[in-house]
Image 1 (spheres, rainbow, N blue to C red):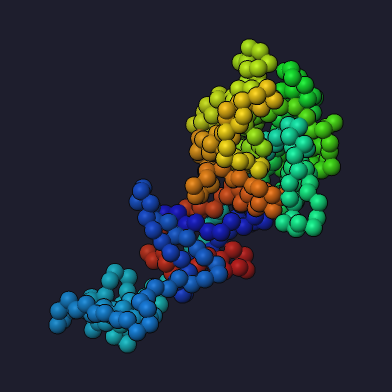
Image 2 (cartoon, rainbow, N blue to C red):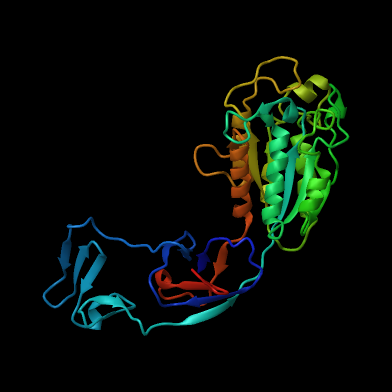
Length: 379
């Protein structure tokens, strides 16, 4: 059995106390494997029932229990315990209810899981040559996409630095320049910042500053080389922790490693990126895909350093599905149209990578009545 709870990003203790009495605090379901999944909601109590004034009864016979549905939920009337469903007893009110004396508790040692996460960040020239809204206020000036990305990474590292081991890859690297040659596609073979604990400060110190210009933010979009660097690094870590890549981009990938000339290098989409993402998933590395201001249109065919006839929106959808952790809804990748949405996307991803499933042994008889205590908190 597994119990799914809300993630506690600051959790460092490893003890949970499960108490089998109290008001219902969970909803349960069974997955395909037969395990029961209990979703704990710390702020609400689930109730079911018909609309006020509606009721119905089902009597199995003159000697059996009768079931009444009312505004407070299903009530089964009874005379003896044997007429009640398994786990319930016939109370003095002649209703089947949970047995308050059938309680138990268990203390579970919860291993602290600290995921390894590499941020693969687009540093192409378009990140500063294009501006967008940062705060949904038309009276404030727009900012560069890089300004927003730096600001959001600063927030994410401040919030989750103690909860995950972070690393970073820039694509292209700081050595890349904006020219129509392979020099626009340079990527470091190993991450600029390797995965480690409490790494937020190192990441921010390595990124070009928020107010960087095209003197520092330049080059093409060698996303495949970027994720290869991240995947290779993560595969070399054998600590048993979950592994993730967060790929952030504002356009379609180019800079193919197999390009025979500059036209192939810059004007053709790098289809092999999809293969890399899918192979990483097969090796246990999940990839989140975040788009920055991605339009659902096909690009023009012209010699401009961007893949011709390519719908970046569709390509990022394909990548997100191949990565194994698509966003819910019709759009599989996290598309952000301003800084607020970019912050929401990266925050949501950060919360998702934190482990929230706790195996319980023995299985509680009544998962709907389980209370979870973490320290002084009760959920």
